[in-house]
Image (cartoon, rainbow, N blue to C red; front, side, top):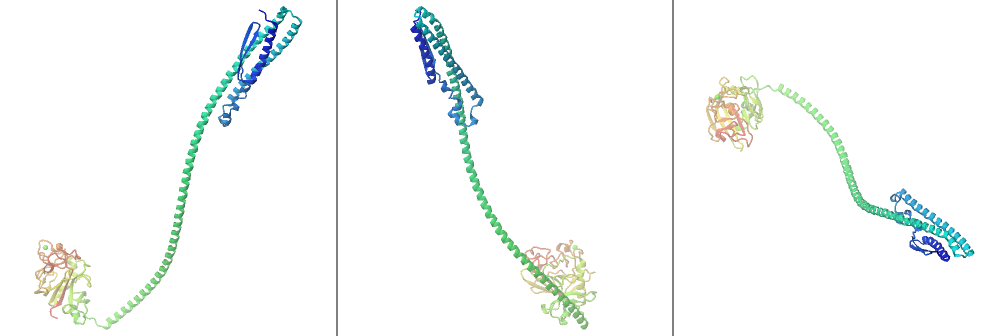
Length: 498
Ligand SMILES: [Ca+2]
């Protein structure tokens, strides 16, 4: 069925209106419009999306507000952004080409429409009109096909735009997560930094306190050093003073020594003078010395008959009239009495302290005249006693210095403890006792051991608190028992007839 020329003209006008409206829709953006084209008895419906191409282009990744706040190092890669921008640019070019093509089509239609209108006014024959409008229908069909093509192209634009937007959203979410994680990390680092700062402050305070303490100690040490230096200086001064004093003392000592030497020389000269003036007098014993006028107890020199050498001897000038010649004395343990036969024969010790005059001298002395032997004993408690023996005489060495007495008398009434007369003298190296043993080795010292007898005044000297229960000590049985070691003893001779 043929369409009326007016209807065809209205359809073309509608098509032109549609094209113009589409262009405005593109400018307004966002909506989908339905267009209908009536061509004769045929009706064409166009559903065209109204993409916001003009708005999509500005919503580029560079204008994202969130990305705009990010540091440059956290932005998407540059090539990704360039790729997206390129794709958007391509779409825009396609759309622009299509639009230009539509504008050209529109102009062509308008030109054809005007020429057809002019021809229609010239030729009112409907048949001719239909013949003239036939090419216009072909043009409309071409226009519809181009419109379909344009619609498909426009439909691709939102899809591409949605895809790009989705990628942007995903990238944005990813970046937001990274930003959140980095913010959390930053907070953690800030918290750790604050803790480290607090610790640093505490350490600085501790360090300052230690520095103050060290400063105080240093000041104390300096004070101490100063005091010690002062003390050292004083000590040096004292030392110098002492050195000078010492030098002075040494000089005085030297002067004194020289003085003593001069005095000694003077004394020696005086002694030689006295010896030259006084004729030398020889004494047999202390009794003779006493008779010569000497009344002071002390050390004298005697000349015993038949003895080649003079003897130093201690004379007791006080006891019971004095004149006693000591042949034995024990008083402090200063002399050991562990001696040989020969030593007991010749005598030993210090006559001013402890000594044994000598068996040979006693033999010669008691062979000249009758002597009284006095034995004095003293214990550790201060008790003293004495025993005297008349006609004490000591045999010769050939007789092993055996002794003989006539009678004895004790000042305290004690029984005699001396061995029987005739008992020989024994030493550790000369056994003359009446025992199968060697009493001198058992009892120590040299003595008139029987077997081994009741006395030994030449035993070992034991000091106080060690003097008990000693069989080899200085013992006298009938005074303090068989094992009591005495504190002191004296044996001395004096002629029975003065
Ligand atoms: Ca014997």
